Image (cartoon, rainbow, N blue to C red; front, side):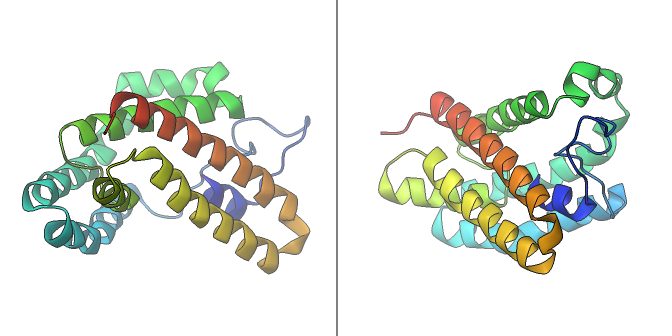
Length: 193
C-alpha cells in the first residue's frame, strides 16, 4: 500500500477527490499480464528457499498457489462481484474502510493457506518458516518483517522527496494498520502451539 501511494504523489485533504487521490490510491505502472508474470517470477527464489528449508509439499503447494493467483489476477478484475465492490462508494471513498476490507481479505486468504500447510508466496514463506522454527504465531513475524519493509520505504521516500514526507508517513500508518489487521486474522484462524 505505502509504495504505491507515496509514488503517486497523492495528498489527503477535504478537497481532493476521494478514490483517485486517497491515501491508499494504487496506480499501476505495469500492465495486468506484466504484474502477474513479475509476481510469479519474484516468488521463484522464495519458493526455492521453502523447498529446502520448510518442506517439499509446502513449496509445491505454495508455487501452485502463486501460479493460480497469477492467473486469477487477470480474471478476477473482470468479475461482476469485483465491479460491485469497485462501485461501492463506502469502500472506495473511505481509506479506513479500504484498509479494513483489504486486511480482512488478505488475512483470510493467508490463514486458509497456512491451515493447508502452504502459503501465498512472498513474505508469507519467511513468516511461516520463522513461526515453524520457533513454534509460535505467524502474525507477529509477518508484522515485523513487513513493518520493517514499510519503515524502510518510508525513510527512503522521505530522504528522496522531503517535500512530500507527510504523504509517506500517512501511507505508512495505513500500511501498518493493514498489517496488524491481517496478522490478527491469520493468528485467530491459524493457531499454533
